[in-house]
Length: 374
Image 1 (cartoon, rainbow, N blue to C red):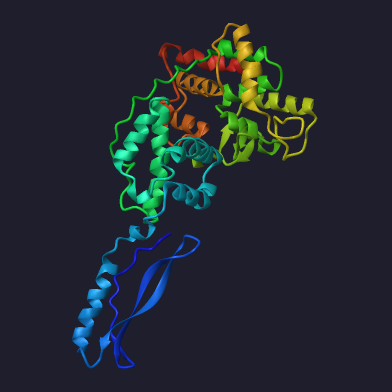
Image 2 (tube, rainbow, N blue to C red):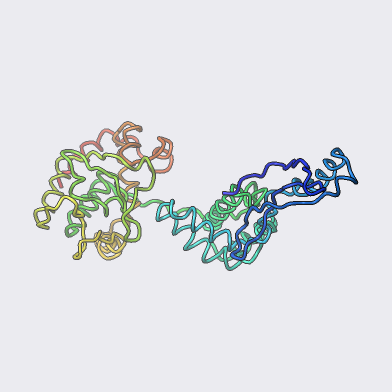
């Protein structure tokens, strides 16, 4: 990262009958990089000026160098150059899902074609606003907001590196209204038990893990047999687009409590699978890689929902179902937060639960037990 340059105040020295100073300047290299170069400036003959006059002449000479803003040395860098540097220095440190959201979608498909040729220092808030407004003609409100987040992030890196003096994507911008989210489809305990009973393995056990343990689909896919303990599952990996990596957030690394019947389902699946290696995936494909849960929803779970005339649910709907059941059952909010791997209780209460009949709270605990025994 570029360092902010301090002012230069070189002192004249006598050399071969002349007053001379040494100073530094930034010089572009053939490969496009900037290199700090030391140079010498002759101020005049010793016989023609005093030391005081030489000092004044030295300050007159270096003043324009000291006054140059740090961003000036990067004036010829484009948005394309910025994204290339972001890929080298920042992208490898991000989660795979964030890399894909920013680079594969936002940068490759939208930012580079529209702004890749624009010098970073020339990009204005007007340019950013125009870009987002044009994008809103073909993208949903949520997608435009996601695009703005990615652009603001990469321009924030330019600000840190002193390629910019201000972030034109920060602050207030006019954005389209976010498209209302699809209303979550929740299952009752009776419906969930019916769905599990009519699914083949391992999909029945996967659904049971989602509605009784609140696991995300990537966490279910990444489970290994070594993660199964007496009464809990250790969640320390997740699968995204076939790649195994870290869970979604720091708080997503957790231990998830499971009941004896859910553990029994997992043990029965291990016996049927004949797999005992601790490092093997619980739900593996034929070649030992994590199973594709996206295909599982499309090929097995949604068709079963339609056949049984149940709400056609996604993996995320099942996670919301778990949270809603928990609230109805009166489970402590902090316990739910830790079980789900949320960073705050507020997310658990405001986003992931949909309580519409609090009168059922006492009965839900009994229905939990009946479902766990299904």
